[in-house]
Amino acid sequence: MIDIEEYGIHEGISEIILTTISPGGVPNAAPMGLHRKDGRLFARIYNSKTLDNILSKPIAAANIVDDPVLFVQSALSDIESERFELVDSFPLLKDTLGWIIFDCTCKKGENISVVELSPVKGKITARKLQPINRGFNAVIEAAIHATRYVVLKEQKYFDCIEYYNSIVKKCGGEREKNAMRLLYEFIGIQK
Ligand SMILES: Cc1cc2nc3c(=O)[nH]c(=O)nc-3n(C[C@H](O)[C@H](O)[C@H](O)COP(=O)(O)O)c2cc1C
Image (cartoon, rainbow, N blue to C red; front, side, top):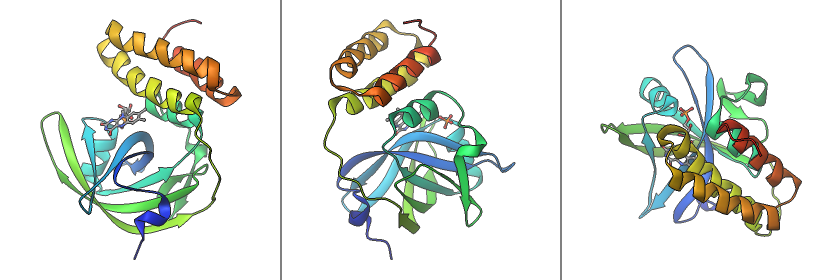
């Protein structure tokens, strides 16, 4: 029995990186919001590789990650296979601080599907004191806007990215600044 509180998954939405596996056995990673509400755990997933994978094999793992570069890479590109490790034949990220594998039940929608998550197995691999860094949080916000910008190319998303970048410049360290450099590269903007 998994105590979800132990993993720092409280009420509200926790941003994790969800790993899944394709029918051909190719691992995939993408940031997703893990919702906890009234005793339920679920994700709201737009049409994507993650959703296709869950529909064909209804298992997913929440990887609890504190690396801003990994959030940007997995949001906007495919993660190299060397960054995964297999646990019970299921792909997890090597850099995870902790993970939970879930059985998934999917309520398919036209654009967005609700995936109910039942914890099966988990492990905490590292416990770290993590004072809040506005630069880190700003990378996460910028990455969300970037995933919309690459699809819709609307100026409002780019303006948000620029705003969050100003916070990264002020409050972030080298890893947050590297993550933003990568983000601009992925959206095709030279800085
Ligand atoms: C912090 C963060 C949270 C995200 N949360 C979600 C989410 O809850 N649902 C969703 O469909 N996409 C979410 N996204 C966007 C996906 O990660 C993005 O569309 C990704 O490219 C999907 O990859 P895939 O096609 O490999 O599954 C989020 C992105 C970020 C950066």
